[in-house]
Image 1 (cartoon, rainbow, N blue to C red):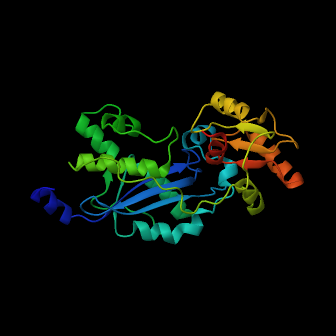
Image 2: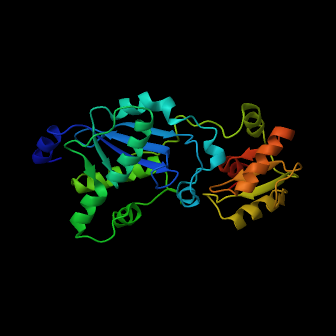
Image 3: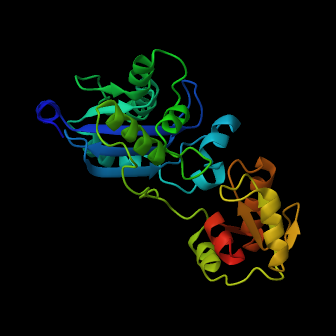
Length: 290
């Protein structure tokens, strides 16, 4: 880093680069996921935060197709209130940055306001990487996917995750300041994530060693492979695919935006029969050798 950049860094506070995924875009919508990285004045990473929340309402279908967090999955997660102190401590004393800072600040402040907590106020050093990129590029489209492609970066999956978006926005911020802008470190799973079924059912899933002879339903959009490839993997492994959930179903492989009717049927059957089990995509891929 040049002497001029070092002097500039010394004059500014830490900065928290963050992103929210939400149930939608209206005044009634809530945050379902928060990702943040805290950077020092030299833009080196000092800490990371990745949390998921039960928003108490279902996501709009378009929002769920973006973030991939189903109502079933989120219903098992803790509310934002359970992590209020953690969030406030992570953001304390730092300037803010995001790719569309106004939106993410508004959504996070909505959660704080519901709990009667102090809001995130604008302060010197706040940065909107989307506005800065657009100004630098002379206008035009400045969505995060467009920007990272221009910088030679790429997502690790097809869905938008709050933590990955925060990391990528951090890369854009570093580029804007003339610093190396490669990936800012590994992605982290949500630190507060809870299994999307009760403890007994989760333990049963952990003990699965083969899908041979099992009846399996695929629902929602999988991140790692197409529905056709997933069906082919079931056939190769001797599993029997079902199109509808019933009391004979052993497992449901659940991706993003699963059908509401299937979710209701799954919950009812689990209450009555203790099955079907929800098979996370990572476990499914492990079992089929994907």
